[in-house]
Amino acid sequence: SMDEVLHKFGIGDKENRDDGRMGMGCIDTYDIYVECQLGLIMACPFAVHVALGGVENSGGVMLWSFLCPMGAAFFRSARESLIWFWIYLSVCAMLLSWEIWNATEASEVITQVYFLMNIMGCMGVVYSAVFLFARELEREYTKSEEVLLNILPSKIVKRIKRGEFPIVDHVSSVTILFADLVGFTKASAELHPNFLIGLFLRDIFHAFDELVGKHGLEKIKTIGDAYMVVGGLDHSDGEKTNQRRRSSMSMDHATELPTHGDLGDHHHPTSIMLLALDMFHELTRINKKYNLNFSLRIGIHKGPVVAGVLGLKRFTYDVWGDSVNTASRMESNGLPNLIHLSSDMYQAVDALTNDFEFTCCGKIQVKGKGEMTTYLARPLR
Image 1 (cartoon, rainbow, N blue to C red):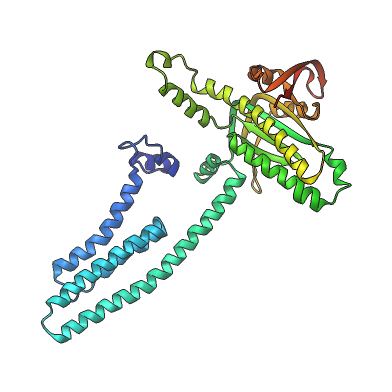
Image 2: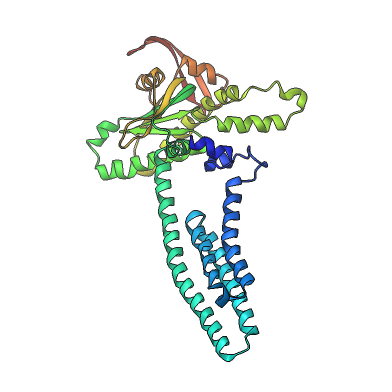
């Protein structure tokens, strides 16, 4: 495939080129290739110009070097192309000034001066148009990337760009949180929508979004006033933590540390619980701001899911599986201002006794699941 050919020569997508695993360590082969090409495009016409003895003898071959800043504007960046353009103008001015200095007749001097002025003027006008177009293109591309990254995770965006679609990934262990505002449906019939939705719910979701990013988790979607978060879809944070811990310990003990998957498996349940704690605090703050008295009901479960992107239009990153249904049931069977946990989730976070008080609910009847042993977690701070 084309990807295999590119990787064979060390030229791949940005994500793979940045990981420093190919060629000479962290050196970016693709960037070196492009810079060499631009340098040759700049240098070769000037070399021919000097070898043939000036503008008249070379037929103005130096004009071809202008393709260097033009190419840089479209294949690199507008900022880099500006550097190449100043290099081009400087070399042109230096070579033509040398010819003017060595001219023996006044008519020859005038010819060289006019040629220099025409090059500077024409190339300046053409490049200005190209530069402004390239810069505007970069701005629009950045805006579209920001919109796309607000809809899909960054790694999923990169996979779609490589032509991988649909995306279906089996994830063996994730933590799923559902949060719901108690009494919101009733309040929506009593309060003005501009106040309830446009101000209160807006601030709630903005605060929750910031908390999700703070804890390194993945917001999946909002359903009315309900909020869904998943942890464990990306274990990169666990990998980095593992590396830091290994580097801080002696080699004799480093082998006793948990593997990448084990460390990540314990990382996201704790992050989800701390997120839930922060969500309660944010709701209290925003309630006071708008003089309201909403409470939050949270349900959490830990288990396997299938994650990915399907469909043709308005697609989003989503998760499927029985674990999702179980987490939703934990929320709907929970109590206000408490966190309802499945037994699998409780076993992963039962050590957080400094932050939560855990109470066993015994076996309860859960719709679609039958009898389940569940736990309630009450925040202690």
